[in-house]
Amino acid sequence: MSRTVLITGGTSGIGRAAAALFAADGERVLITGRRPEGVERAVAELSAEGAAVEGLASDATDPRQVAELAAAVGELHVLVNCSGGLPGPASADLAPLDAVPST
Image (cartoon, rainbow, N blue to C red; front, side, top):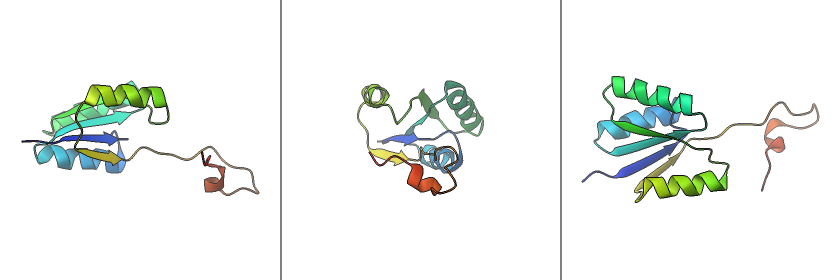
């Protein structure tokens, strides 16, 4: 029986690589990204490589979208959080990570 694997930020980098590995193991893999065109492109590329993946556009910083995502996914067995980013350039007296909100 396959597991359902959700990978936030699964359209590129580590998330995309994880999606390919889980799919190769026969898991049900869903990837997310903020931009629908990026999600569609990643699903098409992974599918062309033989990976069976599904894609959903969702912004993990928006609680409403996260709730909608949870409802769409259903029962979840594995969550891989690869979404993220840094804010724009900080002022000269503030390190980039200090500009990330802590709430």
